[in-house]
Amino acid sequence: MIIVVLSFKGGVAKTITAIHIAESLSKHRGRRVVLGDGDAIRTALNWYKRGLAANHNVGFTVFDGDEQPPDGFTDLVIDTPGNPNEVELTQLANAADFLIIPTSCSPAAIEATIQTLTQFNELTPDRYRVLLSLVPPRPSRRGERVQQALVQASIPTFTQAIQRRDCYLDAELSGCTVSMLSGKAAAGAAAEWESVGAELWKLTKSFR
Image 1 (tube, rainbow, N blue to C red):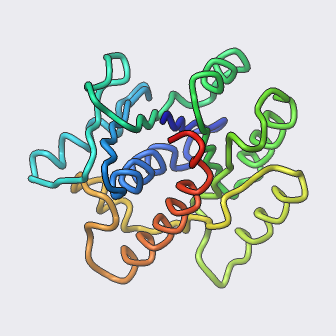
Image 2: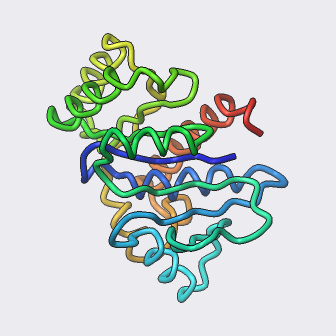
Image 3: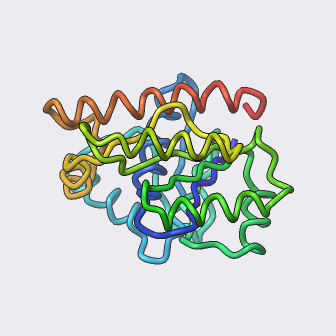
């Protein structure tokens, strides 16, 4: 199964999404998950190397996206370069079994996502979901309003949104995922990814 994570605007937690989706898939019995880092600055690959140096076992392998994936994988997660044009989007859609499109709550990110998806008619709703990320914590209700706007625009979204948390910086520095950290914030973040992963597993049943 091939899962492609892409975004139409930078700074929307695309790499964080790819990493935690790979972790979620790797927790299912019999799955061998690899993550191809196709982003220009290789954020996921550098994260993975820091984790190896610290003896962290994240449950999956990260490789340079310009190289061939390791043999024997069951699931390939691709962290793509940001801001794909229409030609690149078509290529990515054709290569993927399922697309995950993270977007933040900023008006520019939402507008870019809605505009691109409404113009790209070949991408059927059963093959992608938008993931609302970097949601401001309560008492802000911005995330709920943005989620409603996406639904009103007939754009398929994950039920669970991902809240903005400082623990992601700790995970990045340590080369681990939030589920490997201690503390209330990390536990909350891990629970959100568990919910997203469970929904993705159901949505991709036909591709496994």
